[in-house]
Length: 302
Length: 302
Image (cartoon, rainbow over all chains, first blue to last red; front, side, top):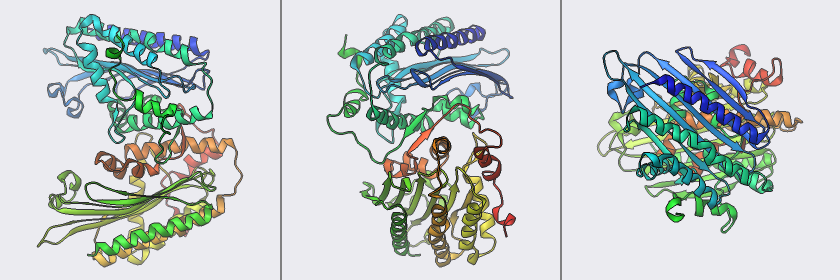
């Protein structure tokens, strides 16, 4: 169990993703490092008003504490009271062009230690895609890349974590999926430390290949106010999910986390409109009927 | 104890406010009535893209059930298992002109009954103002109208419910007040039924006088993209408050309430921007330094 290796991996991953996005966008990220009074800190990188990305945030954080509160470890009551550290990279990229989907990716590690006892640790993470105007080709590519990232560790992982993703990114009050899913895993240590860490690296490393080809394919599609308007409306669902359901966001805000880093995920411009529904048969209606339905993309497209 | 009289009062209040706002705006509200499968229903009235109001929603609802869950009555465990009804009028008006403040008002009544026992009931409600560009005159007028509404029932009520309002409409993760406050009361039955109901009516009746003179004074002030931009940014705080903290919103969404009616409060267009701060000495900075500071407006202006 080697937190330093994970720390180094996560910092490197943030740097690689920042560089890849800057190459596509042409604009540089702002880098903002911060310290946490209770221990630890992080670096938030933000690109706003870019050429391709209207708001793209990627944060690295490493937070440490000397006594884990019981409320933070419901699934692991034996970890309460231990010294602990949590680290992760989390990103949400909101493109300007409504034909390019919004994406979220997160990889994280938690460990609680006590002298003379085995450490309690786990990995978590995943990535998921939120299109406005969907393309089957993109959905299949994204899911295939996710599957290929976890397949070397066992054939069971993609279906299991695809389902966890669909279950997690669901807006109960709308009876709607947030997007077309991807993979999501948490409390993951079943492969032992070395292989579980390799699993996390494989997911983190897959992100650029999962997302950037989609950006390249769609970023120059012409669009008008109509598509921008639908994008702004649908981004409201992203806000609702993150503020009402997302565990990381809610825990961060309640535990005195750094608000601007936690809310990196918020979209740049959002609209709400009363009881709006897309016209039957319209491209906007296809998002609801053909994409955010929990489809099994890879069974349909071998 | 007469729920029918409250029902009639609340429906009438909604109608009066709708008519008053239509007179100012020149555009009509959409009226949308709905039924709840478990019992009860309501009417949501919405004005979008008006001349003065960009999004103004006012909802009436009357919800009934035959067995109150214990989780819904933590403050009154003796009410669990009883048949119950809850009714209220709730509004949030988002003006287009950034010099006109956003306003929220709510009046509500709850009763839990059991044959052969005294009913358990209480009133709740209040109103609060959220300016973008503040005017002391407006803040004093709003608070004075609130004070005058509750003063006939006792001099203690305005200071007590002014403080409850400041405490409630507070964004802990921003260490910021939502606006300049007003009054907020809950679990209110200490004057007996007739006088407690009169208290609630006095608050509801005061709303139009508290808010419309401010709208009239500010609605024609010229503004540019700069003020619209700040308004959209500050509306983000409204979204954050309502989705993260507001008890009514969270309870409604969790309890399978009607989502579009609950989210009447969402602003029409909202922006998020990383770690933005107003320039020192700017009109935007004055909001933070001079208005949303929990000031005691009426002690300063007798």
